[in-house]
Image (cartoon, rainbow over all chains, first blue to last red; front, side, top):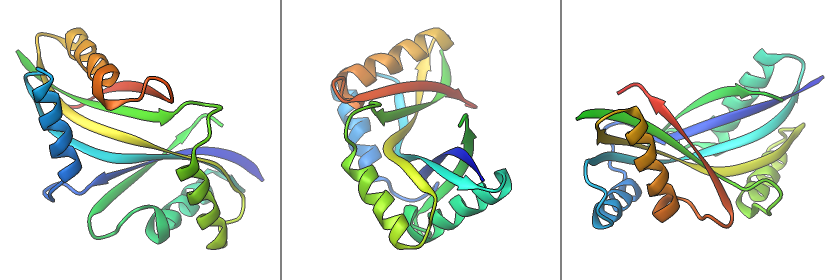
Length: 84
Length: 84
């Protein structure tokens, strides 16, 4: 068993409303940051997983996303292997 | 002016408590995901910025982090250029 460090990026699905992103966008504009658009706020979960190999580490993380980390209706996720 | 798409990763600073990460870690263990550790939950802000060049786009995003997006006491941030 090796330890893998994974970064899971969870983002609001393209095309769906993202009220938090809109609020941040308006706040940035109120702070005179012009030219800012399409702000979206997601979550970045980093975790370490013990697994036999990289493939099963990723498979485990995908299952975590489906079961707990991401909302399958409104969010997309992507998993990247970081240095352990 | 060009449009740059930036990904800003905001993470709880190493060494500081991350109650949300702890809660997620316990929930994953309760769902029988063994071998999960060091879970930390941050935010991933994606945004588009109009700027003269990549350097000023990044500089703008750093200022946004310092002024609004990140808590300078408890969080670190990193900025990556995504495809526009």
